[in-house]
Length: 400
Figure (spheres, rainbow, N blue to C red):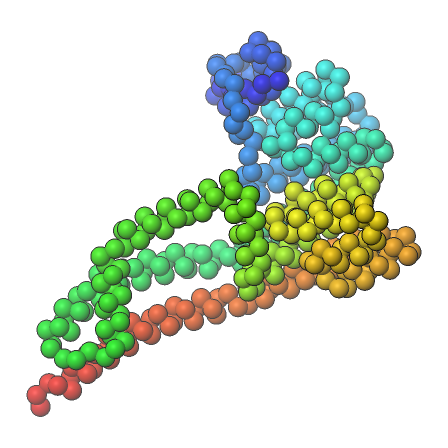
């Protein structure tokens, strides 16, 4: 069915915009009317407004999981529960999605099938896990795990935000402060030094040469930087080979590379635990985790695990060949194969990478600010030594 981008009025006369899946424009108008909206106009679109919106989007998903868990535990009929959920949810976007899901369920589809129509909002993982839960009768357990997983992601993003917010703000002001110094202050000092007709030291000459270059080309440099950023971003999004190369190079950056590796592997184990608890078999669970890793290099190595196991290799040997897992994790899986406690080994591995990731974040936090201060201090020392040193040298040539 086509996706419509619409504008409508609610009961209070407030204009509402959003997207809705419907058979045709008349079907869309009827669906909106049942939701208390009066259609103004609509058009078919391939663009989705249900895009990633940071932690706010995650919090909406948490609300959805919370109400869905309550609905399942109270044994409410699915349609009644969805309508109650829609009335309780504050997000306009999520209200519209739930109303659309209710219409889809009413037409004879399952909840997971209705949710799969909104993969841009929920992600493919949601509908796959719930579909498995519908088959195994583990829906409540799956929803609880999803809630905990989303809660972990929100806590993680909040912590990262705290770590990088201060350095990013500091870098912004430092950049424009030094840009002002090189564009406006140093040229004036250059004219002053030339009027003294003295031999300037090498570090002062280098400072003036650098200042001349920045003051003459700073606008071009900013435009070039913006252009390169656009080109790199577009290439990253469009070229799989370039994206793979960038992801591989990022893993080699000190501190950052290890952080990205630990984050990807922690996500892998968390989704593996979620998938297996939903009743998905081990090999299919591996395939489900691959898109969630967010690093093509690591994802390729994880995807090869399934191929190795299908060829008859043991789980621990396949993980070892991936060349991205710690030896303690491989040993844990080796023991689990003998005891039959694979799920327990996955849980232990998840805890291991969670601890390692927290330790790496603390390490980055410990070194980030001193590194930033060292760079700023070095640049400031260069500028001050070049200016004050030359001024002091000029005083020696003054007549007594």
